[in-house]
Each structure stands twice: as C-alpha cells, then as structure tokens.
Length: 360
Image (cartoon, rainbow, N blue to C red; front, side, top):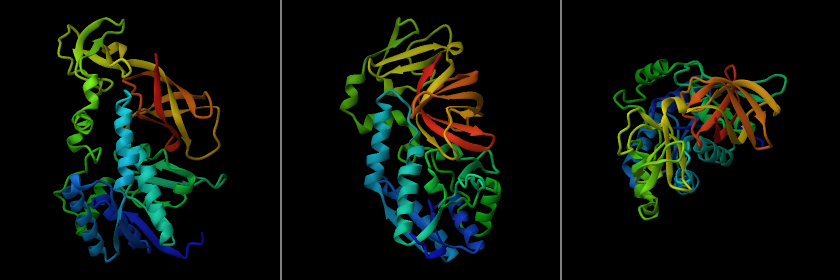
C-alpha cells in the first residue's frame, strides 16, 4: 500500500495520561495525530468505558485533533475473555494483556489506519524501537523508565507491526510524562492508574470465573489438596481459586507455611509444598515468537518469567519449531504455566513464549 498521509498517525488513546501525552508529543514533533479509542467491553461496563472515551475525547479537543471510537466488543470477548476463562480452567494462569496487545490493539488499530491510508500508529507504551542497520529489522528495547518498561507485554508483536509503530514515550520517565500532562491540562491528576486486567473488577479472578460460569464450575467443588507425595491433606472448593505460589485458602493449618506448587486441573487437585520446594531449575515454553534477527537453536540471555520480574540468566535451547527449553542460571521461585516468558539480550527483546511446563 502506498500511504499518502505520511504526517498523519493514528494514536491509540485510552483516556489516560500516557496516551494523551503521546499524542501531544507527536503533534510537537510535526505529526498530525488522530486519536482512536477502542471500546472493548459491552454494556456491563458501560459507565467505566464511557468515562474513558470521554477523557480521550476531551484530551483530543484540547490538542485540537480528531477523535474516533472503534467498537471491538465482540472480538474482545471471543479472543480475549473466552481465552482467559478457558486457559484458567485448564489449570494455567493466563496473561490476557499480552494477547490483547497483538490480536486486538495492534491488529484493529492498524486495520483502521489502512482504511484511512495512514502508515503509522502510536501508543503510550514506555518502550523504544530502533532499526538494526545490518538486518533492517526493528528492535524492541526497554524504555528510559525501567520501572514502567512494558516490553514484556509486547513480545507477540511482529516485524510488520513494529515497522508501523511509534512509541513517543520511550525516552521519558513516568514522572516527566505526568508533569507534561498536568501542565498541558490533558489529564485529571486525581485519576489513578488503570487496573491490571480491564475486564476483571478489582482484579478478583476467582469471583470473575465463578460469575462467568456458575454452572460449569460446580463439578470442580470438593477437590483434593495434596502434598508432593500425593497424600491428601484437605479439600478445596475449586482449583480455579488458586495460583502458583499462593499460601492462603487451604482451610487447614500446617506447622510450616505451604504454597501451591502445581494445579492439576484434570484431576481437580492442588499440590502444596514448603517454600524450599517451590523452586525450579528449568521450564518449557511454547508459541515462540522471535521479534527480530534470525531464530537460533541455542542462545543465552536474561529471561523474565513474569511482569516486573528482575530477570535471571538462562540458556535457551529449541526443542522443535514451536517450543524450547529454558534452563535457569539459578533456580526460580513459583514459575507459573500460562504466564509469558520473555528473553532479553541486554535491553533488547529477542523472543517470547508461553510457559507450558515446569522442570525440577
């Protein structure tokens, strides 16, 4: 496609400080930003998202730029919410934001940009994109503010997406962006950060699952809580009430603190252990996506096994075209199937995948 509107950029705007200031910075740089807000949830969340749309529209009015709303409720429910529930009921702990970034945010905003004959899109992520002069790949790198770095959440993006993306906030800190937002009157400083998962009120996963499938989960009541030898210690009201590393909710006391080591969804069983047995030496990841560079059979780097994980040195070895073994330099605590694992070379994202299996 020959994009004639080279100065126009479609900006994903949630109504928060980051995306609002991203649009401001782009305009200062000579671009012609157009705000686009994705309405992802249905009428059950009408007031929440009407407020976000209103804030995004207000920011665009102050910037004197156009604002549009794109309805994606059906796709969000089909691809994100349903996947979250299915994954949770398989005994894994999903990361819906990672899936949403690629399958909803980038795909929908890029599709809308194509309709408008616009080449670039932008978001308020604190990440940096840099072109590799040798390979001509676009590399995804950590932003200036390491406390707000969001590259972990972007590992599913591909080169086609990265080559059309702008990250105006990569060279700023959150404090600097908030100060700009307040100075320019783009935000209400009394509005806090958005919650981790937008479609789960108060981040209460357990309650959400029970309300979403009240009949189906009845069969998971009265499951077993066992130790690593298989000895039955107690009963539970559903494996979906637990996550790896959890130390509460067992309805029975122990002389030592016990933590969830494994969730056996098939047998409706929770395995609990003492803290020293919660560590693992390796894991298997699947659904691997190489962000830039040629795929390698073996490599080393720093692996992050959850958001805000400090990272650990590791050895990466491909098993087949879609899975690999990650061996940790030091044992890691509470490695959780279903979560994302992201491999870095210094500050660059090399690849990402989904944790499938933990290896002692």
